Image (cartoon, rainbow, N blue to C red; front, side):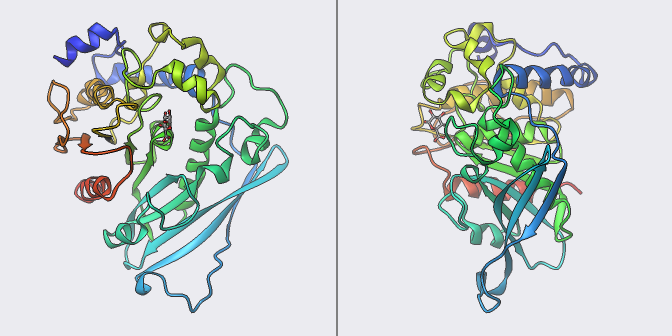
Length: 357
Ligand code: GCU
């Protein structure tokens, strides 16, 4: 049924019938996605320093003493100019390297409603949370903080990065730091985000192969959802309110999804052979659960080339469905657009039971 749906919507599938075909295509696909949708990532900074700026006093107890909590400031020198952003980090005192999450957040504090730090620690994970607005504000001001550093007053070109690409780039700088911490199991680091930051999480994890798990919660348009034939938010609607999330080239596709050389399943496919977790909320029709599921379903064709699997059926999901028995997972929480404890209770046990050796 969904195969027919993909054909009906005219969703292009990558021309790959073996893993080798796909590997050969990947560089070109990455280039196309950045050029047409998100914009090109900034080049590597000249220098990066990570400063421990933890402010709480030594007497302060965090999580009954079961975890260490830090505030780290990322100081970037980029083309001779400097900028910075902070992130929070909590590491359980486990006495051995633990899996970790990079959470791309709406707020700077820890814990906050979408980052239940204590429960995450209790599950045996470390967590690093960065707030997207601390990197560069969620608006069309490309002179703000890290965007200003990158743009240096130059106008945007058709392919220069939108804000999603800049937030993703920042999440990869947090990943660089985690790679230096011996308390963290570097083979088992996930990236997670909700909604606009679910889109950002997908871009981060698709391009930064150090992330072993890529989680997109209610990511919708420009995220996991197939754009062609999508209900709720369309490219036209997202460009109307949030043009600056994407590169200028993306605007060519307003009302012209069919002209895109790719669809969102191509982005999702870049996560193979790592683990991809997609989730929807049943009442989140703006994001369109069916189109999110279709994205996962279509991407799983590429995972299959690696001998990997998706347990979801060849039909649209119904509220409450969850499919975990594979390398691509999907669940549809009953309720509203949100990153809830129920969602975390899907993600954390899955990661724990699928750790890389
Ligand atoms: C808006 C936007 C969505 C986005 C959401 C969010 O609804 O249209 O694309 O996912 O905000 O980030 O909460």
